[in-house]
Image 1 (spheres, rainbow, N blue to C red):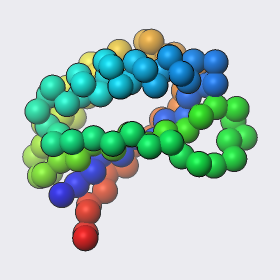
Image 2: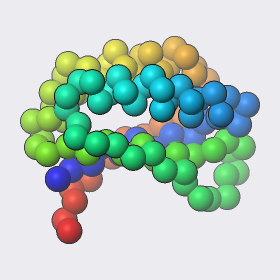
Image 3: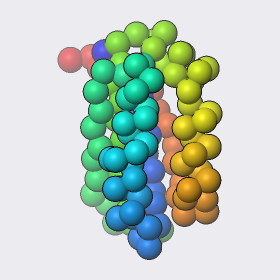
Image 4: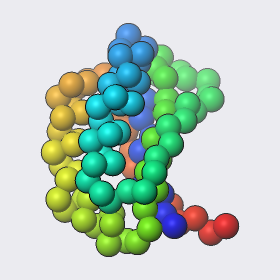
Length: 101
């Protein structure tokens, strides 16, 4: 099993709206691609010097082909939608993780 982890710091002034949009729109759209089996959204508990709130959104998948399909067929459009909606209000980085145990 693998995890596609997206860590996002979102400005405080849009954080509540963003979280609602993520849970009601963006995450369901990502799951509709069929590339992921489940997801998790977590709040990072850290001293946030940037002034925003930080979240980890984790999408679980079974094979590397799943993430390759997501990246080649769906990721650009979904990322663009997020960027257009929250432009200059967030920073994000992505990590692939392999679940060992």
